Image (tube, rainbow over all chains, first blue to last red; front, side, top):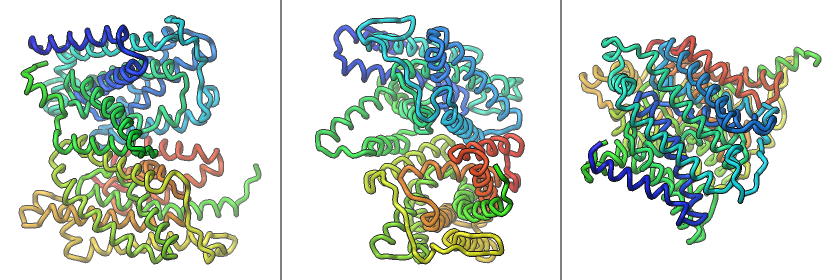
Length: 323
Length: 291
């Protein structure tokens, strides 16, 4: 990272850290959503951006992570700080078995991507009929007092939730930066660029690809825990939906996959875009269901066609920033 | 639960007929992938558009879906051709994920455009002439379903004939087999890709017109059909044409049987389990040859 990158990072960090002291409720809720997508985007980016394994089924890890911690809290009053370990373990097991099955039998490329979708959809239908967690009717957590902070049970004010997701995002960034420069990161990039060459160099591609999936899955599961306790309700139809997976990957794709700042920039752009489009639509009184998604998709289309590597690499070159 | 053999046979027959229409839709997906190497993530959404066009033609012009297939197929051929020639062709050399995202974006645009235009309410086509069932020995077969399956089968046979007996069809197969070789002998590969995409789109157009006779229509059907199409072509073998039809019938029957034994809403779980098993143990699909 050059000095410009460090400067950018510390400015961004400082602004985000002090945001609750001057921002209102509305800005804070938008910023929370932004950080959530920045974080989950970082998680997906490890698997796709670093190791080149395209998952379109990340809602699987998000949903399982969310449901595991929420169900433990709902049924037994177990704190999410304990419950999140179950979330992580389950997601890691799912990710590892998906990866092991796929890579053991040489499933790759398109087939691998379709397998990730199939796993997520399988779980979607499964949770629709899993009555212990409410089935398709949903799971609802008791809403605590919004003005008292109960960090142990993750019940509290919007500021508390903001700080939790900010911490997660910061940790996600640090982990990504460290991984990218670590032995794992170099192996992953070698596999991404040319798997056969990597194998010829003696890299156990099977092991490192599975490792990329479980790292990504574990991170996404923690995002799911946050999601469950922030929104207090879970529906299989929403959390396991393929559109949820797409939402997760839009940020890094628009920002620039395989980069450190890309997922964050992408999430920021999308949040501004989503919010801006809602306002515009409301202002001209054209508020029909679907218009927002339509707007979203058109922007996505434009970015894919004209900026194939995402916004960040182009911007970084302009600003002379190296990661 | 008393096990009724006649009832069971009826369910299987009904599932197989629905499966043929599924199969035609999947055939379109398979042709597009087999030739142009494009994974059409907007396939189900295209199907839904075909259904809306058919329902619209029926409601406004009182045009029977069996007649509507002709204009719908023609329009979809042109639509597919233009889509491939203008938007998708530049993406052929880009990495997989870029192509996926492109088609996903197109799919989202389609679904939401339908939602904006038609609203979330369910629509359907009701033909009085199709209310009576056909009696075939002890079997009672839904007339609409039967004719729909016949049309699907006929379209598939026509497509097989096209690929086997016409020069363009042979050229397209050459492109699919060896892209570079086809280019070397002077075939216009990009145009043939566009023709293939157009044919795939026409298949989905016909399948959509027929599907209006089988299910009620909402904009949200699109993604579900896309997933169903993937399940079928992977079970049958991605890129294999007979595989798509066989896979369609297999999934149609298994869905119908699953609906009989477990709750109907869980029947897609069965299909996805089948998909996962096939992907793992026979990734090229049941009838897929090596790609």
